[in-house]
Length: 391
Image: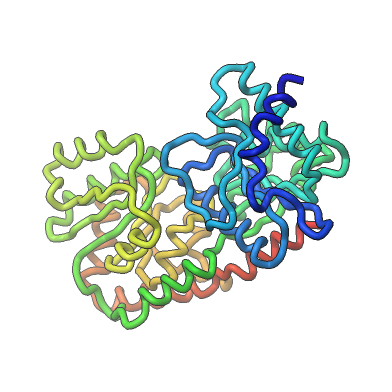
């Protein structure tokens, strides 16, 4: 009852311009755990917008706001929230869950697409309580072993509920990470690879136009992504020791910023490693286009949008040699379109980067492979795959 009162109190914020079904249609709800800037939030905002422009009544929602920097959305599809702030106490968490149940009962969405572990788990249970008419499609954007252990266990159980219709993974590697899940869970799995929305594809095409990728134009290596453990940036900073004439630009912010800057100073490479901080999407893409090579030494990914962006620009790709990254640089014909290096091999990364920068033929070959990979990632294929899951 308390949760229903809270929902009533929040209803003005939850019911945005796209929240109510139009012309008798049931709405489609895209739900994430929180709205902070991140890959899963970006993909969900992109897909929700794709559904909206195709005439579907759509709501884009997060359980709660978290960090100050939220993922940008179109003006026609603002974030709605189940709770005003991140619930920190058990009582607040229960209230948020009750509010979610109330929302599903009221809106009666045709389908709820969820992303991130907490949203996956809570929506599955809330839909079961809201009634048999509510179906959920959960999604996984990184290997399940990287989740909180309790959330991973809960996901194994809730994924078997009848309310969960399909379980999407953004790569076959992420899907394979679920092989130990129960049989009813495994039977619902399918893979849908990520792609970029048309406006971003258009900007990348414009940035790539007329840019000479026959050889390196300078000696700049670009990485984009949060300054966090997953991205494995210490190996890139160590690699800078072996490349005295190469400039490394890292676009992004995050919890490891101070430690990474301290490491660069300790190794004496702070003058060659530029931490440019968080940048708006358009500025990030412009910086990426001005680079000579894209590098992503991550310990894990799901299906990296940054990798797709770099491929659309025809930048040679150097990534970590882990299964999901190998899948990310492999085209539909099974051809590898980038260079993969063992994640902790700073010398190996330095050797691969300098080889591409020094050898015009090698650079041209890998630029062509990257562009071929980029052409294979299309938004239309991705959005159609998600539309097929909606009633």
